[in-house]
Image (cartoon, rainbow, N blue to C red; front, side, top):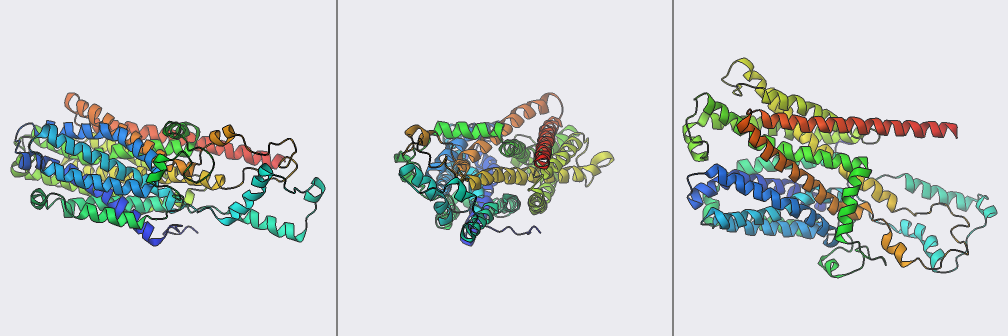
Length: 550
């Protein structure tokens, strides 16, 4: 029976540093900045006009830089380790926040501060994905080394290999040895789906921490600059994520060496090769590809909730004459249109609460079906997303508390949107982590399991060729940082598409256009899940028929 709380191979301190340090605060600082950047423009810099244009331009520049920064941080983490990247990210975040509150103009000072935050935030958000597989990764044991020993000896010199006849003779010693090897080979690492559920839970809690704890302190933040929070979190992660499974041999020194981080004799793969392999996996491996596509929808969903729901509410109140405030000035909206501000906060809060409650459930059910049909929870999330976004986009009146007609459906729509958002986040992380972890376990086994004359053939070279050492495919566990970078890159592209295309259609067509665009994203994800599910089912049936024939 699947346990509700996942069994991790990482220590409790490492798990706590990941969940509380990375998963919670990476989202918390990001939500805090997005929620308070308009206060910096109006209260710190003193700009009272074109606030919306300034905030939009800053956000667009942030995402453009993040498109490049996320893959770069992922590549670096494969060389220097995820712990170092996470600590550097929080240090950059803290430094950029100091620059933000000391800016005297939007361009270039505030823009440079926001770009600095984008670099640090990209490191933190990318590590949310990169650290996940290490929580359930198994360290290379002496048993694996012992299993590899005969193969290494056969290439380095003469080693006694059993004859064909002796291979067919089963002795008690040989039987017990092979039984132990078979037992070990059947062991599987813990699934990442359950842990991804708790990651979603802590990211949702991080957003609430930002809104409930950080956001009420803008005046204090404006006067004091950087709070000790970034330094405390960075220090906690530095010590908490030491000696993670699969991170052995990774440090800043790895940037200056030409050997592989694992300490082998092969040359470390180039950054270009790592990126190429990570992108290629999205087209050749269904788990990685579905994880990328789920990340695309997940990141776009976060913008749909935090940006376009308040914008939809504000547009309704302005269109009906219930609010006469300047839409480009957040302070003016709060003073002259408190009802719209409260409604937007309430609908967004309901969506995030639904997401917070649904996170562990998606992780739990994802772990129960991960063995055979890991993609079905993601299909459920995409179906709910299509219904929720279409339903909200068709609303004429989003005021579910005072309105009439179809306004009562607003709460159900935002609940569906919140469930879809957290479902795509949790399921994409779980599927991506499973795709990395499963192959990582297989790669830890000997490449030639069968023992026979081929292993010790006299025609075999005594030493492996240099080209064989260099061209050996990289272990996916060594690609986890690069894969996480591509995952964040795809998500950043989704945000750019949604903000630019959805924003333009919002002004030129209908206020529900961004939600219809999100429904299209979820529908595309639904089609991909169904096609991959049918393909996997056909493959399993083909294997079953082959086994019966044999």
